[in-house]
Length: 133
Picture 1 (cartoon, rainbow, N blue to C red):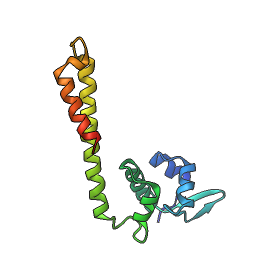
Picture 2: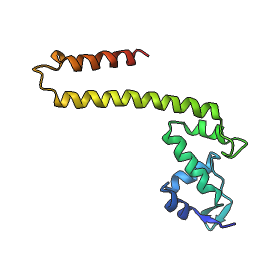
Picture 3: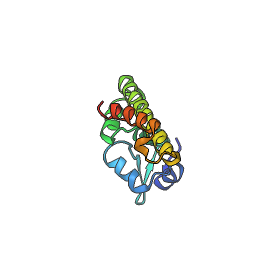
Picture 4: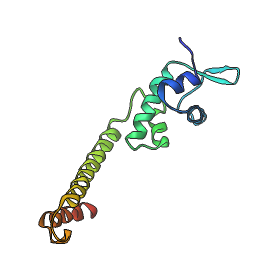
């Protein structure tokens, strides 16, 4: 088994050593020892850190990620939870796409007033329905 120094893990993942130490302290990754003052990790730490980063990017809190890792080390992630998060991301994508379209239209619109523009009013109406959900 290849042992990886905290500096090497940081360099390979882009995660600062301070964050790696925090992840170790809260049990998201586990150091296997120390070489002087530097923590050492097994190669599985790279996979765990990648999963943590993806989980954070997907909007999961560190607590939620820790719950997913509990018992399985990330080998058997809760599919229902992942499906629900994917659906939430799809909703966010739709909302952000509408917002982007609205901003682009406002920037290009030649109407004397944006409130006089039929397309802008239509976009506002759609956006209003999405806000109330």
